[in-house]
Image (tube, rainbow, N blue to C red; front, side, top):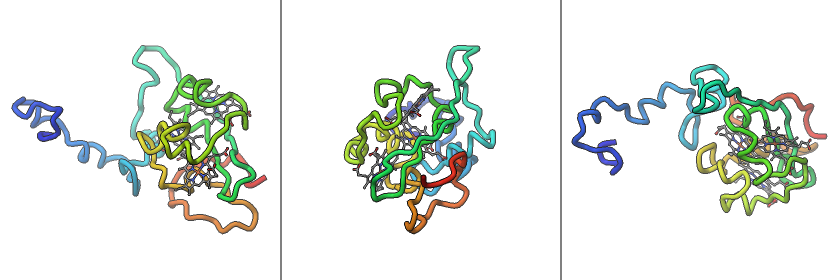
Amino acid sequence: MRKDGLHDPKSPAIKQLQEPREALSRLPPDTTGNMVRWVQALETGVIQPRPSLKPGVEAEILDRDILLDLKGSMPIILFPHKRHTQWLACANCHDGVFEKQTGATKMSMFQILAGEQCGICHGAVSFPLTECFRCHSVVRPGQVKPAIPPGLPRSHNLPGPP
Ligand code: HEC
Ligand code: HEC
Ligand code: HEC
């Protein structure tokens, strides 16, 4: 922190501030990205973020899983609304980034890797795009089950591949 060019190295506060590594070390560990399993941190109550800076605002949680790319070759993508709306208001995605209708938005891995669509956040602030099977998590019939890291919370309100 002393040498990050953001904090004043001469300030007396520099000795009181926690290093990010130290602060994050108390949270459930991940193997990638910023090394914290944020969904687990939230669900186990280790962190309790406020829905808004304004007092009295309630988070609007939508518990609805969306399956994307039903005809592709990779395992199907399961987009969990619940695990997003626990952090994010609808307006972050609707209707600027995604249509409010399954299948209406033309998505592609190319655009995602270019930092659009899911890539606005994944690879920037949420888990990185190298974790293919966290998104492509629903195996098609006959496909080998990909390795999803043990303990990774996932939605289970869908029966599996349609
Ligand atoms: C992180 C992004 C994100 C957030 C936040 C989000 N959504 Fe969505 N939503 C999506 C995506 C992706 C789809 C699928 C779009 C597509 O296939 O074109 C979708 C689809 C939908 C659909 C269509 C469902 C269907 O069966 O066709 C509705 C309704 C919807 N969202 C409502 C909401 C509401 C209400 C909120 C806030 C409580 C919300 N969404 C928050 C990304 C988001
Ligand atoms: C506006 C930001 C944003 C967008 C856009 C977004 N996500 Fe996320 N996503 C998050 C955050 C924040 C988390 C929770 C932190 C984490 O797991 O890294 C998350 C978590 C997830 C999880 C993990 C849920 C779990 O059970 O651990 C999946 C799967 C996921 N996103 C898929 C997608 C897919 C697929 C898209 C595009 C259709 C998408 N996300 C678009 C912000 C976003
Ligand atoms: C953040 C979520 C997410 C991650 C991580 C992710 N993908 Fe995707 N992927 C998507 C979405 C969303 C689509 C588009 C679905 C559609 O066509 O509606 C997609 C589509 C694809 C397609 C279909 C062809 C295309 O370009 O649309 C392939 C192949 C693919 N991904 C491979 C990968 C590989 C390989 C990785 C890991 C290196 C990966 N994906 C990681 C969300 C993700």
